[in-house]
Length: 269
Image (cartoon, rainbow, N blue to C red):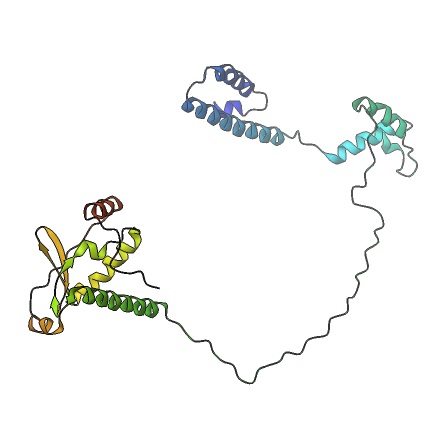
């Protein structure tokens, strides 16, 4: 069918498009619309092939033959131009104009196809170059100090851990006695959930180093500082680490249950 439709005299493409136009109103699904677009692509390919077959049969436009035919029509004698030389032949342009004016509703404008005959190029102005500024080279160049951001964070964290340990030591060691305090009252900040998380983070370093100890008393977690002598005597004791999960709702419930109105860890300056 494709080869038959591609023949120059075939009307199969026209009939196929008419059928598709009648069926397009019945399209309800996307798949049917895709098939319609595929049909148009196939028809365009066949139409291109049909046009190529028309050119292959010798029906191409010959510019030289067309000019000779126009010249023959415009000649005053209206006879075969071969009887006269090209210099003696007179062309009737008015006759060609009367023949062509029926194809135009108004007089076509005259346009210059290859641009104007003479173009005056603009003269490029030569600008005076500004005097170069003298570059002053300093005698000695000081290199900037290299700052390690990781070292700065570790240093600030270490200082904060020492500060929290000092606060806990002053709270637990009174009258030359070491007394534990409530872990929640010490670590929780009732006004800031973010500072509470920071306090738990810094306390974890004290627990890892064995400088503080957490235990449960009457179902309440307690925290107490560990003296250096006790830490040396119990160097080989069993250390345990626990992951604490704390969300915003739990933080609010703990603050309300333990009636915490202020944080024992003062905010850093």
